[in-house]
Length: 285
Ligand code: CAA
Image (cartoon, rainbow, N blue to C red; front, side):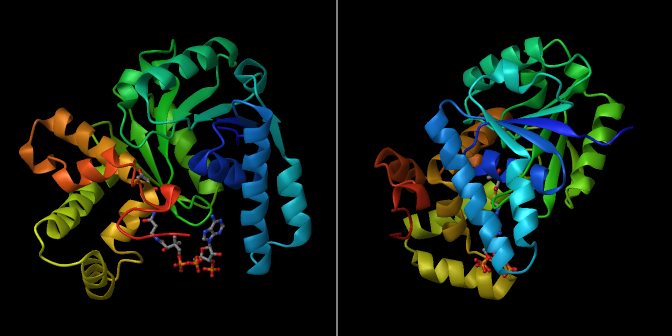
């Protein structure tokens, strides 16, 4: 199986720009799609800033930074962006109807042999694959934030994903200097099925007055060597995203152990979503 040389990334938000950064840094010509030119420019600025951080840490040099930026081509048109690519990774918002629409378009325009991957953290890969004509070449490629730093790619095998597609994505992930872990397509996969109940339980501890957020996070950082406590991590991920994933787990398994804490629901209703709104369990500038 040959190495992927050209890929498209759909969506230039936190995950999409991180994925484009990593693809391009590993020599893959990357077509980055955003809804308009301003958003595409903003995504490139973020990538440039994160590359500067890596230059500062002497992980790459200034030439590698420029080469990485040069390999990223921005598009606002999906049809043009997926022409001649071998892999498409979708990283648009976590909304099934939107993803379905995007994949219908990609499926029509991308070469027949191209693999289609979704970076979804909670939507069924099998269900998304059914929106395309190539369910055997459809897979989950779940990256973690910050993408340039986190070593995992959770490779999610849909019901109809072929063994060749799984092998190609495992190889691609290794080529990005990541560790692929292959899992089956059930709600929350493995990562969020394990992570979100922990975050939810930490929120219940705040809700029930067991301890303050700082204390809960200290317990998990110092006692369990987590780099961030669960409440700091929930803010980092986005409280709306955490709530959406808990809903997927709750509805998918019909098990009350996944019931979102009422405090989480209330914070999302108030628009306190964590880092991105400046206010969550903590305040940010
Ligand atoms: N691009 C490039 N490099 C970056 C970066 C970025 N966006 N963000 C951080 N870094 C680098 C820093 O330069 C630094 O490099 P060195 O190790 O060479 O010093 C390193 O990452 C650590 O960063 P900092 O020193 O700034 O800060 P830190 O030590 O506090 O680490 C962190 C920050 C990496 C985010 C760490 O706190 C951490 O690992 N947190 C947990 C993150 C996590 O769990 N992510 C998964 C979230 S779940 C998800 O994404 C998916 C989902 O489905 C919900």
